[in-house]
Image 1 (tube, rainbow, N blue to C red):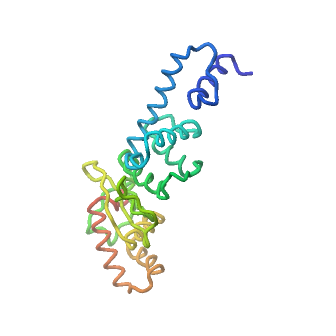
Image 2 (image 1 turned 180 degrees about the horizontal axis):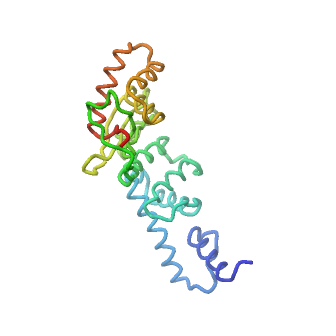
Image 3 (image 1 turned 180 degrees about the vertical axis):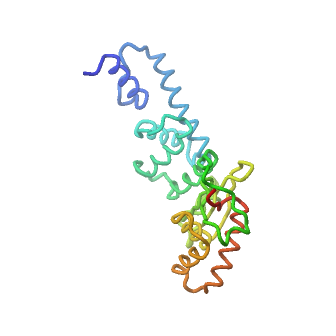
Length: 250
């Protein structure tokens, strides 16, 4: 049987999360309860707003508050850390949120694009990864850095603003690599379909070498000769190695 203290805790948190549907514990005065309600909600709203400034700008103040309130009251966060709140909000949008007529169709893609900057900024470097020199690309085992993300979107997420909200997807996806450079600054690099394919194969087959990589690419792009694929992949991966997007095993 739960203790009285446990019951009060559960009532307290249920009221904090959703005060409209859960009564406060009877022994806590309203003034103090209001302080707790505002403190918890405002902290969460602040972290989400700082992580998704463009998405927030597309909503009225009340519309944004309502969205955060739904997240706050409905989503069960898996992490206790404030730093993870943005990722939890993205998961909420992707898995349990019912899109409203006032939400843009590109909502989830834009949210992901904004979140990935935070994700890369706090990613932990891995000891098994070593910098890849450009003259090593031809022979080394290739890895996508743990500090890099290979991304594609059907909307031009990098251009969306309050003044520009596309109504339909692009005819071709837009591709990006988001990575943390040697100065620990997050960089956004626009790429293309072939670069995205190269990186996706490397990500799926860590340690693959250039020759095997080109054979894999040839299955998707049979219109190119092996020599064309090899030279194109070498040039692209050399540039990615210089940026630290591609690494090798230490």
